[in-house]
Structures are given as structure tokens and as C-alpha cells.
Length: 625
Image 1 (cartoon, rainbow, N blue to C red):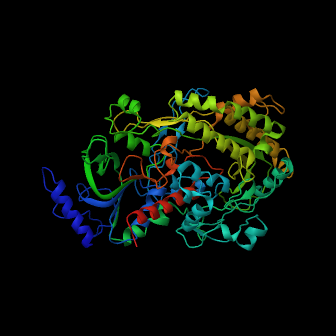
Image 2 (tube, rainbow, N blue to C red):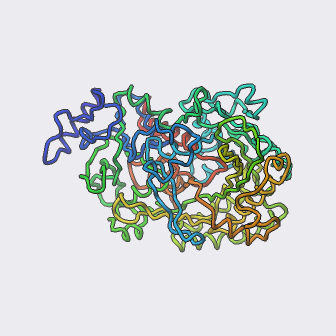
Image 3 (tube, rainbow, N blue to C red):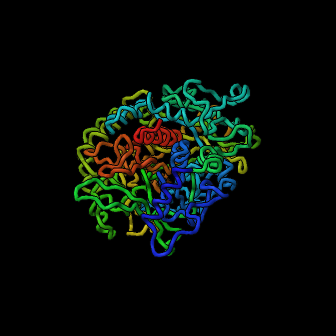
């Protein structure tokens, strides 16, 4: 407390304006500096060692780890509120019901030409962020994909062997019961899981049986060389798997959210950890420095609403951006860091040019197949679903795989040039290198899945189906500020299907999904295809018919990455291997926006790993014991 009192006193002396601070200038919640509050009283013009912009998955994780040291103070500023008891968050079986509500920032893409409308881009607006709204799946990418990260970032510590230790650190894995293993197919390999972390990972009391295993058996029968993968956390992604979820095993599918795992108890028990809800960071405030010197953050401006007073809070050490792939680049750009042309168009003064901010965006596309199940199917559970087929490139493209590889490879340099010409990437030469690395990884690595076929169950309507998406996209998009106000959502252009390989994989995945449903033993469980339906896409339909339906019906997967990419600066990167923004002394980005390439996985485990590793890096850089 002595340390905190001193920095607060210094803040008062250095930053007081017009009127004095409240009599008690510390942020008060339940009589201490800790807790959750929606009032800025006592926070405005105070000083904290670390200010974390965004109380989502990575923000709360890193705040929890940094506040383990009682000598430092940590403030999280989150636009949403504490909604963890809401069934829309707490019960993972309500997945999707929170989208486009007050729990979501309700950001949309630019209009999609095939649908003549923008697509919803879900971004959680609540403590826990999108980690409180997602499907709670726990999988990891391929070893070979993590091993690309050192090549892109220049930091060897991001390879699979090193980085996996941080994913393990976050996890508290609960082994399946005998019945879950023997009847429902829940398997695991003990060495690929952590057993003492905050995030509860289990197969869940309501785990489905029913069609989940027959779906994997049908996948094995339908696809060449397709086998079971007994642990999707092993670094091997290709194959059929039953995955665990981030749910509390003793309870009825209650979500183990970023908030309940890392902050709910910690923020009340520590007197150096504060969460301010209902406010958003509007910009980073810079100290005056000599021309040409790196920028140094003094603190941040924040507001509770567009027309409310702009308030200021000072930092003693670092600003950490954890606002997600659509809003962390927005904060940097509003603060004058980004592409000069983008900032000029929005009326923002350039402080430091960094062309990669908001560029290099990669996002996936999802289509859904739906079938009416035969009457009387016993699903033997309440969910959530956990059965997934992860086919590789050869299983999707068959004998055309080699042709596709050679064709795409020959055109990559030209494609990279067009991306730079359209301001979708910062550096064409570097992008060509990255695209080639991704292409080789998709087609030549034995541990990489090219798409995901997620088997779904709706017990209310007695329908089963699949959510299908291409995992590794070569298309590149952008997320840039619309105006000079943080209250105006960014302009987000994901450039869906910009590269023909993305479209081909998405198309092949839909066809393979139907093939699986036409294969025993799964075929015996269905009576009719409802979506797309044989009237819309007949058996043996030409690709053009599949493509028309696919483009009309696809949605985003909400796995946006790379808008503040962790890459070498000459590659167009925004942060280095220690997550520090290039050209800035004391600002890091610690969320999904730093991931430079997509993974063959759901993102949560990797995001927890980024936050855990980021916290350790910060501690090392400030010489913590």
C-alpha cells in the first residue's frame, strides 16, 4: 500500500487540474483500492503502474498475473460490465444468444458483395470479452504452426516447445470419467495438459453421446487416411476428435470464463487490482519527447459515453492494449500511431508512422449444413457439442491437391504485390514470404488441418448438422478507424474469399461435410438435408451451384487476428517478440491482434498462452524477482 500511496500522491501533485481530486483520491471499492467499479471517482488523474485497455480474455489474464506482486498497481478499463451470472454467459449451451446484444460491441464488416449487407463481427463487451461469449472449445494449433512464429517475429521463444508451457500454465484439466471415456469417446494424453491453472477444462457433465462418435466413424469411412486424433491439444490437428470445453466439471456446463478464472476472486482479495467497467479508452496520451525519439506513454484518456467528460489516468510503467483485433489497432490509430494516409483521412495527427497497424487481418468463413434427425435419437446429454473432424488439404482436395499447390505457389508473388497496392499489407516482399510459409505449412506439414467440420446437435428441433470453415486463409483484410472518435466503430474489411484457395477450401469442406452425412454410420441417423437442401444444391451439383449457396449464406467465424501482428518490423509488424509496439517505449499489445498467422484451432488456449507469456515478459523486463 505504501508504494500505491506514493504514486497516487505524485499523481495528485503532477496532474491535478481546475478542481481538486475527491477528498479520498484513491479509487474506492468496498473500502480498498481493489474491486470492480463503474465510477471513475478517484481513478481520474490517479496513477497506476499498469493500465490495461480491455477486460477481455487476455486483459484479465495479464492483470491477474501482474497484480500477484503487491508492490505494483494494476487498472483494467473495460467498456462492458460484470455480467458473469447472466445465463447468456454462464451457460455455454446458450452460445450465440448474446451476439448483437448489449454484451457485444456490434461491429460490422463492410458490405459483403454476395449478400448485399455487412456481416456481424462479434466482439465481447463484458468482463471476459469474447472469451465470455464463445463456444468454450479447448484445442491447440499444430506444432509446425507455432514453430513458424520465431521465423516471423525473430524471437525463438515462441516455438511450440516454449510457448506450449504457457498454455499449460493457464489450464486446469479434469480427466474424463470412465463412462465419458468408454461410451462417449472422451480421450486425452496426459502430457499435453496442465493441471494447476485457473481455467477449468473438462468434458463436462452434460457431454453429448448420441451422434457424436458415429460422426467421427463416418468421417473415417468417408475420407482417405482419416483417423482418430485422441487429443486436440497435442499439437497434431489432423483427424477426428472429441474435445474438452472450458466448463466447470462439477456444475451443469457453467463456463470457466476469463473473469471467473482470473479475476473474480483475485480482484476482491488484492488491494492493488482494480477494474473500471462501463468506460472505454479513447487514446493513449504521450509525453513530450525530442523529435525522432521513441514515443513514451504518459497515460490514457477514457470516457463513459460519447458526450461525457474525457478523463485521464496516468501510468508509472506501461500501457497494455488488450482490446482485441478490431479495437487495439483502433486505439493505436486514434493515438497517432499507424499508416499516415489512414490517420490523415480520419483527421488524426500522426505521431509515429507504423504501416502495419490495422493491416494483415486474417479471418475465416463459416457455412452450416443442417439435417433432420430420425425420430427417437438419444443424444445422451445436454451439450455443448464436442465432436470435430479436422481434414487436411489432401483429404479435402484429393487428386487436385498438388495442382492447387503449384498453381497458388506460382501466383503468390503477384498476389502479394496486389495486397500492398490495395493497402491490405505493409510490405509485399515480406508478405510473399509469409504466404509461401503458410502455403507450405498447409500442404506439406503432416500435423496441419486445413478445415474444421464441427458436428452440432439441437435437441429441441431434433436436428444435427455441421459448422464448417476453412482454417488457414491467405486473404488479407484491414481494420482501421472510421473517424477521430473511439465511439465510431472501425471500418473492417476482412476481404473474404479474396484469394481463390480460401474459396476452394471452403467449398471443398461443404462437399466433404455432405459426404460424411451420406456415409454410415451417420447416414442412418438422418432423414432429410434441410440446409442447403437438395432442391438448392442437388447431389452431384456443379461447383458453381455450391459456390452460389456458400457465398450467400456464409458468416464470419469471429477469429480475427494479425491487425497488430507480431512480426519483424521490416515485415510490416506492429509489435516485436516481446509484444512491444515498434517506435514506442512503454506500450505493448497482448491480444489476438498480435498473432501473425491463423492456426488450425480455436483460439482460446493460444490467447491464454499469449497473456501468460506476456505477463512473464513484463515481469522480466522490470526485473521482478
